[in-house]
Image (cartoon, rainbow, N blue to C red):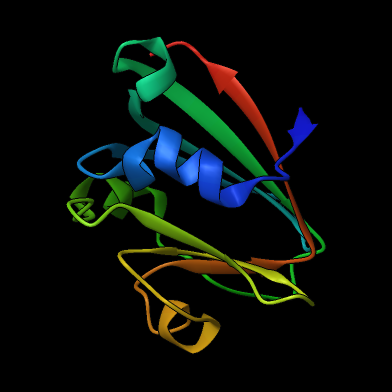
Amino acid sequence: MKPLNDIQTFLKRFDNFKDGEFRSLEVLSPTVMLVTLVGQDEARAFDWVSMKLEFNGVSDARLLDETKLSLLDMSDGISIINDGSSLAFGIGECYNVPSIKNSSCFIESSSIRQEEGTF
């Protein structure tokens, strides 16, 4: 896995995972979580790819049961916001950390790493 440094370019490349799939959410330890998403990759002629996001230094989260992930409305995609002291990931179109914390599922962490996979 490699660090996710340019969040805006990453989100643009996958169109914020709009109409994608939220495949899995794993708690690896109290401070490490792994999310797997599927979306269309602009860099690959909009081919469908999976993307694993590993959140390290998790300080706050609202998680959904694995059985409910397929029911999530992904029409607005995801948001990732860097507020300078932490990174916040949430479902839907969010503009700041407080709005992400109102999301049905969110993770606040100190860093994010990514790994691309196949569909």
